[in-house]
Image (cartoon, rainbow, N blue to C red; front, side, top):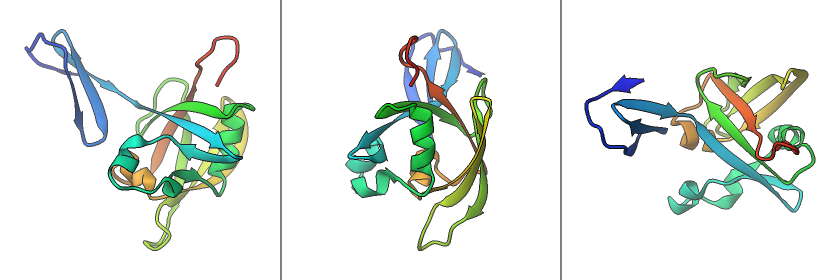
Length: 153
């Protein structure tokens, strides 16, 4: 937490990290992203990417990431995930196994467990990951955001 003397509340971004002031301190807010299943295919909902000229096809989750989203969504067609490059309470870890060549882009990751269950899910995350984080992180920490107390994900 970074403190300042400004008493006004306001938002800003540094890189891809969003901050907000409340009172006299800056508070970092991790990212949350929603993933939606359309015609049996998963996509990250990332309007800023499309607005910047990106193609919706780039947002499709494939090669293991789609399988992991099926698990995380627990039978639903949408799931919201909190994510950061720093560990946080209750988060599961994705570990970068290999950077892909520039033609393919992205990297291969391993998610050893999800919500205390062993999954050992390998997945490819495309170069859109660089748009989200500004680079391909060595580790990404993720946690399903429960949107309904009686029906998670």
